Image (cartoon, rainbow, N blue to C red):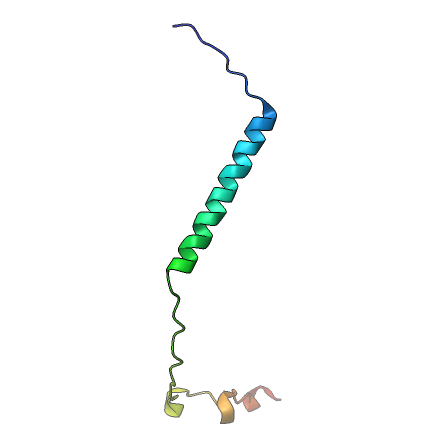
Length: 68
Protein backbone atom coordinates (compact mmCIF):
# COMPACT_ATOMS: atom_id res chain seq x y z
CA UNK A 1 0.00 0.00 0.00
CA UNK A 2 1.37 3.37 -0.99
CA UNK A 3 1.48 6.14 1.62
CA UNK A 4 0.02 9.43 0.55
CA UNK A 5 0.65 12.82 2.12
CA UNK A 6 -2.37 15.04 2.60
CA UNK A 7 -1.83 18.78 2.62
CA UNK A 8 -4.28 21.08 4.36
CA UNK A 9 -4.67 24.79 3.92
CA UNK A 10 -3.86 26.40 7.31
CA UNK A 11 -6.63 28.98 6.95
CA UNK A 12 -9.26 26.28 6.56
CA UNK A 13 -7.79 24.32 9.46
CA UNK A 14 -7.96 27.38 11.73
CA UNK A 15 -11.54 28.08 10.69
CA UNK A 16 -12.48 24.47 11.41
CA UNK A 17 -10.91 24.61 14.89
CA UNK A 18 -12.67 27.89 15.69
CA UNK A 19 -16.00 26.43 14.56
CA UNK A 20 -15.45 23.35 16.73
CA UNK A 21 -14.65 25.53 19.75
CA UNK A 22 -17.74 27.68 19.17
CA UNK A 23 -19.85 24.54 18.83
CA UNK A 24 -18.52 23.23 22.15
CA UNK A 25 -19.21 26.53 23.90
CA UNK A 26 -22.72 26.78 22.46
CA UNK A 27 -23.49 23.21 23.52
CA UNK A 28 -22.29 23.85 27.06
CA UNK A 29 -24.29 27.07 27.28
CA UNK A 30 -27.43 25.35 25.98
CA UNK A 31 -27.09 22.44 28.40
CA UNK A 32 -26.52 24.77 31.34
CA UNK A 33 -29.70 26.69 30.48
CA UNK A 34 -31.76 23.51 29.99
CA UNK A 35 -31.02 22.06 33.42
CA UNK A 36 -32.52 24.24 36.13
CA UNK A 37 -30.22 24.81 39.06
CA UNK A 38 -32.22 25.08 42.25
CA UNK A 39 -30.78 27.02 45.14
CA UNK A 40 -30.54 24.77 48.17
CA UNK A 41 -32.40 26.00 51.22
CA UNK A 42 -30.12 26.94 54.10
CA UNK A 43 -30.10 24.41 56.90
CA UNK A 44 -30.01 25.70 60.44
CA UNK A 45 -27.72 23.55 62.57
CA UNK A 46 -27.62 23.92 66.31
CA UNK A 47 -24.19 23.31 67.77
CA UNK A 48 -23.75 21.05 70.72
CA UNK A 49 -21.67 23.13 73.13
CA UNK A 50 -20.79 20.11 75.28
CA UNK A 51 -19.07 18.40 72.33
CA UNK A 52 -16.23 20.93 72.26
CA UNK A 53 -14.02 20.12 75.21
CA UNK A 54 -11.32 22.73 74.66
CA UNK A 55 -13.58 25.55 73.50
CA UNK A 56 -14.31 28.62 75.49
CA UNK A 57 -17.01 31.18 74.90
CA UNK A 58 -18.03 31.74 71.26
CA UNK A 59 -16.11 28.65 70.17
CA UNK A 60 -12.70 30.14 70.90
CA UNK A 61 -10.05 27.93 72.40
CA UNK A 62 -8.99 28.64 75.94
CA UNK A 63 -5.23 29.09 75.67
CA UNK A 64 -4.57 30.25 79.22
CA UNK A 65 -2.39 27.19 79.83
CA UNK A 66 0.11 28.45 77.25
CA UNK A 67 0.91 31.56 79.24
CA UNK A 68 3.92 31.16 81.50
